[in-house]
Length: 151
Image (cartoon, rainbow, N blue to C red; front, side, top):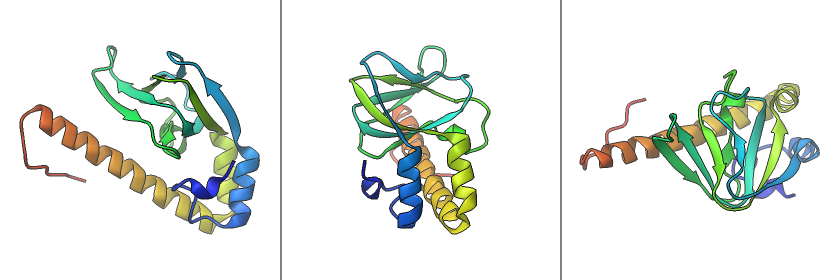
């Protein structure tokens, strides 16, 4: 596994990336499987290595987005102090992820404060981009052309 290719980890020191690699568990999941469901305890953080995942919110998946790029994150609730996942993550194709135990990952980041700060800044940036894309999709459904983001 090469964490250097993952945008979330690129700014971190080599020592921290090596420690992250030791924490990562590579997993494969079949098409139709779930990494997690909304309401499940948020115990793991995932990085997509391969495949396509639909993130959906609501009983019938009323709001959804697709995660399909190498290095994209899933299950960020686990790193944002949330006790449960806010979305369900369904595998639309066979999926390979790197799974991190959120408590172990948090301990590692706390032991390297400079890298921990960089990680959380990048995490916030990536969550913000996903939120902005969600706002844009919501506005387009309602026929609005001008995208105004609040945040």
